[in-house]
Length: 298
Image 1 (tube, rainbow, N blue to C red):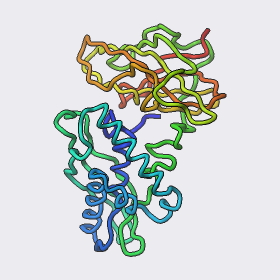
Image 2 (image 1 turned 120 degrees about the vertical axis):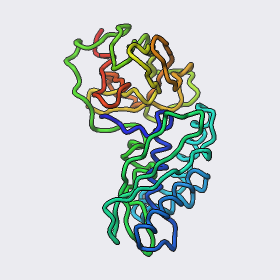
Image 3 (image 1 turned 60 degrees about the vertical axis):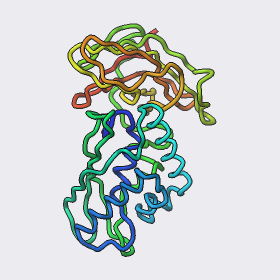
Image 4 (image 1 turned 90 degrees about the vertical axis):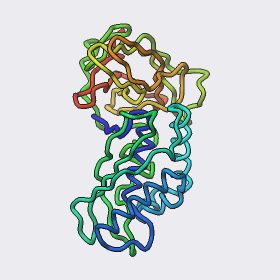
């Protein structure tokens, strides 16, 4: 369940950029350089708000799966949250490199490097290699997850995945109010609100909002913190990633130096009837996630 994190504060949005960057525009030569140029053009289209061009960089199969309106609304929502929470402009991210590997005239893989604005220095890293192919005279993305229609960094549209860590035996994990060591951080879940009422957003039909009041202390060095560092699991093994809006005051994205503490609410949207069993923190993504709350404990 270790999730890729191109940038800690905008996981789903920047994931879309890196995925979209694997496609290309029309009239691209069927060469490695042509693919590189197509990838750069698609990434820059996404950064500049040309969502139609970014959408057209995906394969026909992907576009049949996810309509343009759904892709555009997801992208615009992501830009809004990024700019509101981080205080930067999405267009200020810059494409700094395009790497191609396993190239053939039928397809291959591309990785895009982005440079964040100065305010977010230290949050960036290269994206992952993504598959693409030659289709109808142009390069297009072969991985549909960047369109937001299912899988990949977007989940299934509701933040659900089927893979998850093993749930501990009921009653054996950390209880509410107990402090847990998680990498260089110490995490305490102080309260649970289930369901959340009066949030800034309403849950989708058949779903409910659940929020956790969490305190994080940097105990062993600098710790990067974001709500997307937490994952919630139900008894069926489904895992839910944090919503981008919900109970306030929300946990803010920040870097904590040793000895500093931050607190706030992390909100999840889950099925109305889901029985929740465990909350995990991923504050050191090179290591396994840490169980910070056993919801089966009474």
